[in-house]
Image 1 (tube, rainbow, N blue to C red):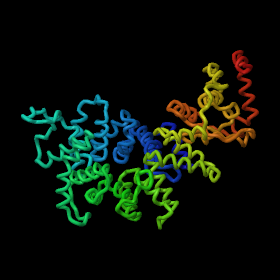
Image 2 (cartoon, rainbow, N blue to C red):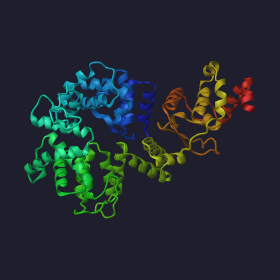
Image 3 (cartoon, rainbow, N blue to C red):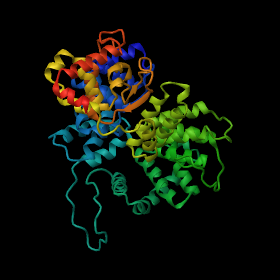
Image 4 (tube, helix red, strand yellow):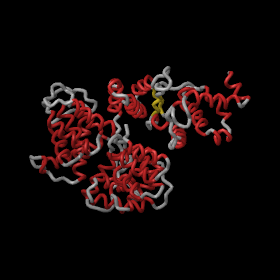
Length: 502
C-alpha cells in the first residue's frame, strides 16, 4: 500500500499537476517505497506530464521504456520518442524506428528522413538492432532484371553500396525477416561454419561483429528444431559469450534441461548444470527477456538444486511478471490469492496480476478473476436514478450526485455508494469496497476497473472527494444522515417516488 508521501503524489497527479505526474511516473518506472515497478503505468503518467511541458518526462520515456510497452499506445507516444531521438538518445531512436515500422503507415512527413541519422549514430554506439532497422527504413534500390537461368521466382536484392561481406549479411537478414527458416539455414550455415573454424577454443576470447554474433544465434535457433548437437552448442556458446540475449536464454535452458515453461526435457547427451544455467539466464534476463526470469524462478524451486531458495524464486517470478510474462503474472496472482488471509492487500495484488494475465488471453486467469471479482449485473438501482441527476442537484449536492454516478458505474449497493471512502478504495486497477466498520451486514469485496471509461469516471469523482473528510464524522455525516439526505432528495421529485416504489 502506498505511503503518505506517495498518496499525496498520486492525488496531485490525478488532479492534473504536471510535477506530480512526472514524479508518479518516475516512481512506477524505477519502483517506489511501496509502489510496484510498472512500465505501462509509468508510460501513462510520463506521457501526461510530457503533454504539459515536462521535458524530463519525454527524456525518461525515450531512454527507459522499450518498444514492447510503447507499441500498445503508438499514436500517443510517437512524438515523445521523436523528441528524445532528436535529443540524441539512442534508445529512443531504436524504439522510434520500431514504431515507424510497426504499421499502419504514419502520416508524418519527413519523420523517416530525420530518424535515419539518429539511427546511424545508435548503430555506431553498439546498439545491435539499429543496423537492421536502418536497412528496413532506407529506400530500397530498383530491382535489376534477373540474369538468364535464374531459378528463384523472387530474386534477392543485394545492396549497391558496401562490401561483399556486408551485402551477404544484408541478404541473410532479408531471408530471416521473411521467416524462411529452411532457406536461411541453407544460405547461412556455410558462413557460420567458417566462423566456428576460425573462433578460438575459449568462447569468451572470440571477438565477433554484431552481424556475426546474430548469424550464429539465428543458425543455432534454426538448427534447434532438428535437435541438439555439438555444432549447435558451439554456435550458441559463442553467441552467448558475445552478449546475444536469445543465445544466452537458449544456452541457459539447455544447461538446465528445461523449456521456457520450466518443464523438464529429456537428458540427452549432456548433464544438468544449474549453476551455469543461472549465469546465462541472469544475463539474458538483465537484457530484457522475461522468459529468462521465469525459467530462473523454476530452477530456484527445484528440490534437486543445492541452492534452492523460495524467496529468490519469488523475486525472479515477480520480475518476469513485471516484464509482461503471462505465465508469471498468472502464478503471482494465484499465489497472492492463496495467501490472502496473511495480508489484507493480497487480494488486491492478486487481482492486479490476474488482470494483466487475462489481458494477454489467459483463460485460467480470467476464470480466477471471475471468482475473485465477479462481473456486476447489467443494471442496478442507480441506473433508474441517473435521469434525475439534474444540474441543480449537482450544484446543491455534488457529493450525493457523485455517489449515485459511482454506484451506476460500478454497480454498488445503496449502502456501499453512500458509505464508501472513494480515496482509500481506489487501487488503480480496482475498487476495494469495505464498509464493514459502519455497516455490519456488508462484506469486503473487490470491483474491477474494466475499461478506460470507468477509469476516467473514477478519476473525476475522486477529485471531488480530495479535500473532503469521508469519515462518519465528516461533513456528510453518519449513515443515517446520508440516507436521510438521499431519501429526502428522492421524495422531492415525483419521478423519484416512482423509481423508489419500483
